[in-house]
Length: 80
Image (cartoon, rainbow, N blue to C red; front, side):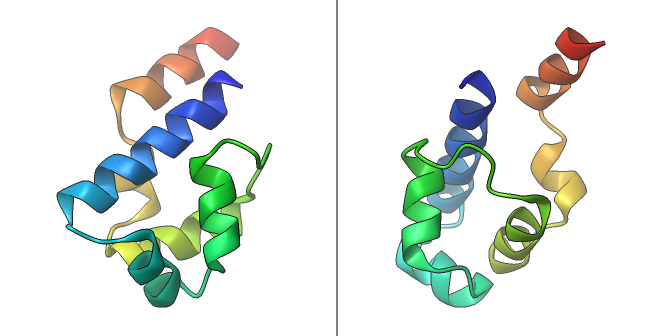
C-alpha cells in the first residue's frame, strides 16, 4: 500500500508541476483516464511497468526521471 501511495503522489506532483490535468495526461500517454484515476486513487495494486512507461511518455520524462526520487530510493533500501 505504501508503494501505491508513493506512485500516486509522484504522478500528482508531476502533473501539478507541468500544469497538466489527468485528462491531458491520459490523452498524451494513451492510458485510459480510468486507469490513471485508479492509480492516483490507489485502487490499482500494480499498474505494470508498461503503463508507467506510457505515463512517463505523456509527461515528457524518462522512466529514470520518474523513479529517481528519495521516496523510491527508500523503498529500494527497505526491500534489501
